[in-house]
Figure 1 (cartoon, one colour):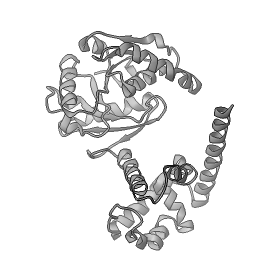
Figure 2 (tube, one colour; figure 1 turned 90 degrees about the vertical axis):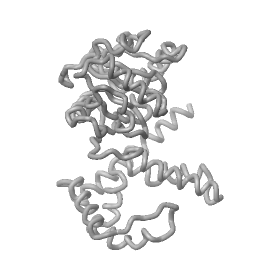
Figure 3 (cartoon, one colour; figure 1 turned 135 degrees about the horizontal axis):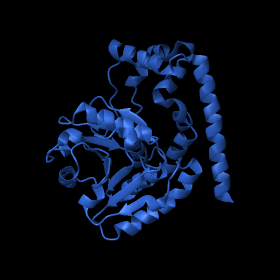
Figure 4 (tube, one colour; figure 1 turned 120 degrees about the vertical axis):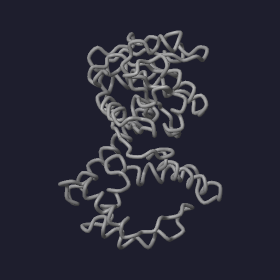
Length: 317
């Protein structure tokens, strides 16, 4: 099978918003992209998607040899995967469609080529049921737009071999992605579950007349959202404990988990959960002290605020 660094051609199956975003990203990283989508007018829409993404990609910096001319839209699935060292499937979120399409890709793609699905919720175990060689099928879940948001969550199914997950994770890293290689299948994956919890609470507050849409958005953009780009929710609460870190935070604020602040049931704060959270924060922090993390957070918040203000200023011109 090809090594991740030896891949020069990628097949994008499905050319909607996500598939088109993937195509733009791979093109910007210097790959040749072969695309296929059965929908009428797909080639024209894909061209417009790539064209719209190209200014942002150019500002970020294009790889050597990157060109929109490296995009080819093929009339059949078999032609699209021909010569590709990796396949990214981005069909609509319909389980029957996913199963059938992945089986079709599997049938016409050499057995040593990894096939990844952009699904945002289905587990690979439930999608790979009709494939002949399911061991090379993985989930490669991106975030929209895939050409700008770096995160990709990679997971296999019950019939996926570990080598395929490892190969896909390494390939995504080589194309500039931030990769979470998941240890277990989890419905909705990690990031979707987190943003879904926030989204559901927002809907509850609007439905009950407790907050307006604008108030909810401002609460995030001018509140915790400024901290999350650098530390995320766990290290953010680690700093909330002061010099005592996550241990002090949980010991001090742990009882508030039982307060009816949200519509979600809180897990029991067992000793094991407490210890896992403390150990996780210590591991993520590494050699950075609380003071180091505070300084890092403050620099990042200032940078984010200045960047947002500059963007708003350009928008108002």
